[in-house]
Length: 255
Length: 165
Image (cartoon, rainbow over all chains, first blue to last red; front, side, top):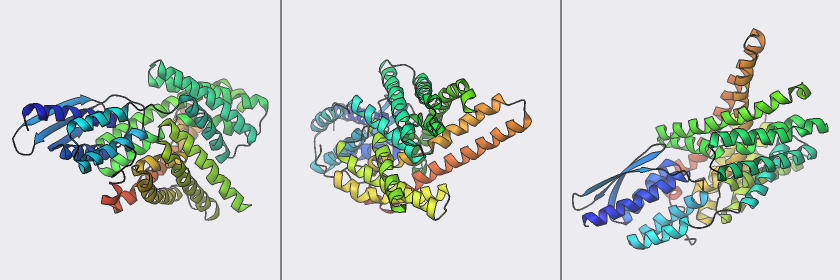
């Protein structure tokens, strides 16, 4: 392999790696898939990852040519679809002996697939939070309040995220909006109003990064795992701040 | 009546898993299996906690193990990595309420910092909630990952030969 070919391969694997890490795939899978992809393209890959950057060295098996990259990890929304598709791509490259050009073309079509319809997601999340309210013992009226509160809160979150507002502020504001909407259940005199108020912000809990962080820790990628958990913990602090603003406002009707 | 309780618990957990999962955009083909796994996991945790009186931490471990095992055949069927199926299925069991109560008790502790008895109560509550939320979360991740450790090779080739790319 020539020097240029190795550089080109390194470019592509760096892109593959950063997309996977950015879409919230746990570290050991990213490392395994990238090595498999490298193997299929005829190079050895060694990877070091951290929270915001990743480093990789690509080396040819025969000649002594090395190529090292440090890439920034872009912040994509979490996507399980990319996780499944890009993993399948690494196996396809391995089994079908695809060339770099073919793999790259396939990669581009996979990552340009449109995501889920935001209105559908909005409806699903509201429904999910309403059933959550039921699981915690809320009655049908509390479920309705939670459904509406979640819809308004999640709508706020979608729009603020689209406007590229800092994500901590997004979390505080949407937790506040959702809980202030749910606090109407107090004045409506619903018996399980506290449950509606408490579950209205649960759609914000960053469950995927929390579980991913712990998976990383059990896989031995302890540093990345801890940084994921700390990141998620910061978001939980923001949720609690947003909720406590509401609770302080409506404290009189709670006590 | 008991049967009805268990079924409705599973049903609502399935809806919650699909809804919270949809934020993270799983492939559409995975949705039915996420629902089945979430229902099985949450209903079994509900049974363990209500009828056998097992604590939330151990019950979560068992439920997560059931979800993890279920995601092996289902993952092979729809060509999805196991995590794509089991993370959304675990989401309804993530101890969100305990997690924000931890921070909330801390905030309340600052409010009552001058009163020694109330301040103590909030501090105690914070440690209680923090311990429960961390342990449950840890058990969820470990329980679901155990099948991956047991079947190294098989668990890592779920997407091999996928028809979907």
